[in-house]
Amino acid sequence: MTDPTYEFTRAVTRRPAASIVNGLRAEDIGTPDLARMEEAHTHYVATLKETGAEVIELPALEAFPDSVFVEDTALCLPKGAVLMRPGAPSRMGEVAEMAPTLRALYDELRQIEGPGHVEGGDILVTGREILVGRSDRTDAEGVAELTRIVSDWSYSLREVFTPPGVLHFKTDCSLLDGDTILSTKRLDASGCFEGYRVLHTAEGEEAAANSIRFNQFVLCPAGFPRTAEMLTNEGYKVVEISNSECAKLDGGMSCLSLRF
Ligand code: CIR
Image 1 (spheres, rainbow, N blue to C red):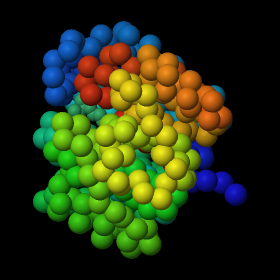
Image 2 (cartoon, protein in one colour):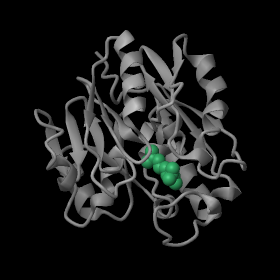
Image 3 (cartoon, rainbow, N blue to C red):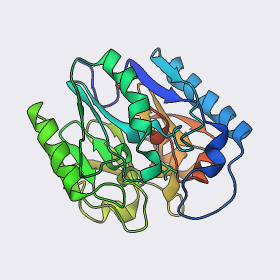
């Protein structure tokens, strides 16, 4: 039996563009360096490939500075994929750029038509349900439209809370297996993971919460040693990937790929 929440045969990524220096950010903590971002991206892609998965590497898109963060453009489920409708106006056009790739791979491809918005970073698919956090990028109409689409495929969707000041729901959590979640304490305190096994990021290492389980590996942003050690002690095979440049744009491990 495979577990579709973390056993994947494919991923889609997109090379960072030179325009990444103009990427969106909540706070200016420095300009991202393209060469360093490319180096980390290469390590990320190589790690996904090391698991035996096929990685579809799309070319950089200069017109869309945030387009390296492909996760926000779609939700990929075993029964179908849904193209998102980003809440950030500068990111809307990224969806049409992703559509042909998913159309070639999925028989069932649906789309959030609007007027609402949803970004993939606000969606966590667990073994039981789809959790969606409302945020500045994902609104009630978007969640309602996504609910209608995934219920056609018999998935249940539950709306949850995103802590204030946090970009996306998954900025603060990730899935380790169908039933186990890595979360910041502040997000878990909201009660949204009741009934799940929850592991907390170490105090002061909240940025480690945006990790990904991809087949045998957990890809974690580098620089959070206590969280990495905790995960290793729990039996996970941790691969630390530099996230210094993506972090300047509020990005982490999950945003860099679509996984299915
Ligand atoms: C943005 O603000 O949209 C980008 N700078 C970062 C997107 C990160 N995406 C994600 O966490 N899923």
